Amino acid sequence: MECSKPKKIIIAIDGFSSCGKSTFAKTIAAKLGYIFIDTGAMYRAVTLYALEHGAIVSGIVDEEKVIALLDDISIDFRFNPERGASDIYVNGDRAEGRIRTIEVSNCVSRVSSIRQVREKLVAMQQAMGRQRGVVMDGRDIGTVVFPNAEMKIFMTADPEVRARRRYDELLAKGDSVSLEEIRANIVARDKADMTRAISPLRQADDAVVLDNSHMTVEEQMTWFMERFDRIACGR
Ligand SMILES: Nc1ncnc2c1ncn2[C@@H]1O[C@H](COP(=O)(O)OP(=O)(O)O)[C@@H](O)[C@H]1O
Ligand SMILES: Nc1ccn([C@@H]2O[C@H](COP(=O)(O)OP(=O)(O)O)[C@@H](O)[C@H]2O)c(=O)n1
Image 1 (cartoon, protein in one colour):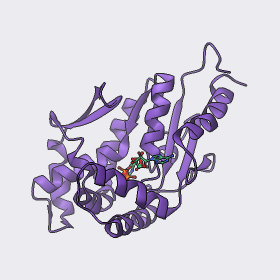
Image 2 (cartoon, rainbow, N blue to C red; image 1 turned 180 degrees about the vertical axis):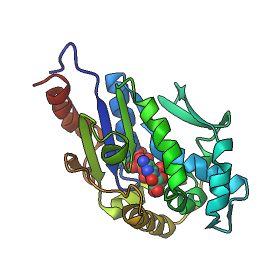
Image 3 (cartoon, rainbow, N blue to C red; image 1 turned 30 degrees about the horizontal axis):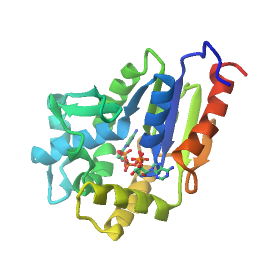
């Protein structure tokens, strides 16, 4: 049912923690030949750098120190054919595995609430999307980064399902974390992200909600392609 010349658009995917935004965005990008940008990875990369450079000690984020480090942090994405997605690099070093630990997860919402951090990363994200043909996932893509995106999806899933998915993922990687710790992190992060002063997580007025608690990625793609064809092919 796809048209021969679909319009290149911007697809904004926002939503709660660990509900499958990146998995969905990556699958969409592969199907459409679009660029996929995981903006959460960028906030995680800044958090990792802050942890490694003394701006976060015993879980306490020193805001002034994080701000002072910002000019030293350079972030880029490089396509990894093995993963079928881009890996994040911080100052030239691959950081993909190191940004997904529970230690980073426990500090990232505090770091992402800092105005200067958001200004730097949002400017980078807007530059990455300038040529369109981009699917970007995060918390403020449809509301702040690309308020004019042609397609906006707000994802959610049952918190228990989300905790279990993240738990299985970390377990498979060999991380030793408890389901309880992950559940607590997800709940705390959602709350912090929704209540922060700058660019809080919220559904854009023109976003479509996707609850994937009981959907496979394949079912999500069927749901998506129907809407994409309508928008990009003018059906
Ligand atoms: N529809 C789905 N059904 C089952 N598991 C899923 C689904 N979508 C994603 N997952 C799994 O859930 C976990 C979190 O997905 P991820 O894409 O990293 O979420 P987010 O980007 O929202 O944090 C991953 O382990 C992923 O493989
Ligand atoms: N556009 C974005 C993306 C992420 N973030 C922050 O970065 C954190 C990590 O994002 P993520 O997408 O990697 O989180 P998960 O859902 O993968 O656990 C979030 O909890 C937010 O605090 C943000 O503030 N704005």
